[in-house]
Length: 116
Image (cartoon, rainbow, N blue to C red):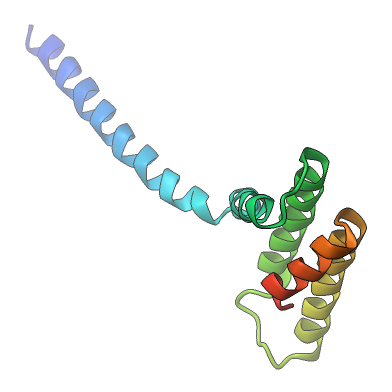
């Protein structure tokens, strides 16, 4: 009977610990490129009156941008020539994706919003 009580108590403590761990991972997921890109695409949808195809294309562009930015730029020396070149490359790739996706009026408004 004592062993059964110990097993039940251990299982209860284990379940409580797992709940706390999952709460921690939810806050960490907010920094993922997909989450950041989704927020940005939703924000731009209301500001630029995007249709579904435009929203999906910008989501993909921002996902790639955020992923590359975190991998090659964040945490690196901002004065390093390679980092500066990478930043310029990814900024230009995002601009090009936006230019291809948006209408001329939307693109001009996007440039004023983004200020890349």
